[in-house]
Structures are given as structure tokens and as C-alpha cells.
Image: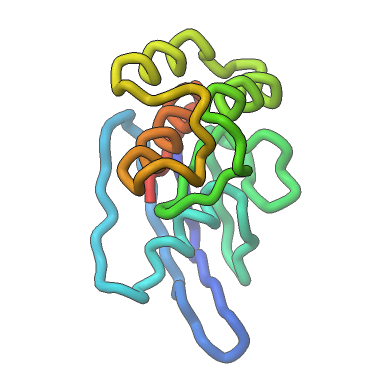
Length: 149
């Protein structure tokens, strides 16, 4: 499902990820632990195809992942994600328009279950509610791999 081979990521002279090899073959919930600045977000962004690695390879579902991969099969939501300042319901609708596998009904049900106001703009939400909207969008994507940072 996820395969990393000798993954290295450098920013200038700083090496953030060094020769990481990892294989996750079974579906499940996995946790990535490490101190601040250890490279967790860099690794997740690289697996999602949001940034390229310096060397090595990343595959998800057998597909090589780079920033030019159109559909990585990965849904990634970053902590403190910033969405367009649109109403919540409109954000869910836009997500469904750009992803043919998106489950809009599930997203709407979750919005109702967690009492999110569909007309309220994203920036007007509390941090907890923003996180909830981002998580709903991510889960409704129906991607093979879901990464929550």
C-alpha cells in the first residue's frame, strides 16, 4: 500500500529525512511519532505528493508519487489547514466537484452530526470546528490512504 525506499529530503544543507525505508502493506490506523522538527510533516507531505523528495522513491498502491502525480490515491489534511474563506457547505460542495469519488452525502451527514453551520464561513469557525471541517473533507474523499497531520 505505502512503500518508501531510501527516502531523503534536504532543504539546502539541512537534511530533514535521511534514507527512510518503510513498507506498510496492511490497511489500518498507524501513528507517526516524533519530536517537533523531526520531519513528520515533511514525510506526510511527500507521501501525499505535495512536495518532492531529494532522493529515493515513494509508492502508494504501486504508483510512484511526485508533485506531478495527478491522482496519488492519498488524501492529506494538514494541521491548521487554511481553506478559502467560503461557507462550510460550499467547501464540501467544491470538494465533491474536484473529486469524482468524493462522498458528498457522508460529508453532509457528518456536518449535521457535528452541528456545523453550513452557512458559516470557514474563518469564522473555532479551531476545533475548522479541524472538524478539514477532517470531514479528508474522510469523504474516499482515497486509499488518508493522512491526518
